[in-house]
Image (cartoon, rainbow, N blue to C red):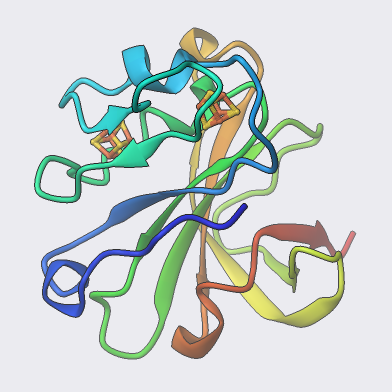
Length: 149
Ligand code: SF4
Ligand code: SF4
């Protein structure tokens, strides 16, 4: 299920998380992962999590803590592109400056992206966070990358 996105006013303030849980299952590591207390699951643990965009700082911490690889961070503040941050478990990791193909939720190639940031910490249990630039109009569509090499 696709998450709500924040208001235009909030988007202009900086990066924000989006949660795209595919189904209702008993799962909640995202709630404890957020240092700002921005993620909550209303009522029952099987409900889908919600984000309080007044609290979310776009810090990326929740991305590798989701076992379902369902959390992304979007930054629409750069003037000529947007940044999308995704969980990435494959080896080898991409490198900053690499170009790759941007894939949508169905795995369809939609555009070329440029890798801007890789966070690969042992604290993240083998899940890196990869950030890449995309055309602004595709930041809500591109959810994975395919390395060219
Ligand atoms: S990006 Fe950071 S502040 Fe926002 S929900 Fe995730 S952990 Fe919390
Ligand atoms: S940890 Fe991931 S899969 Fe589990 S409820 Fe949170 S966002 Fe959904």
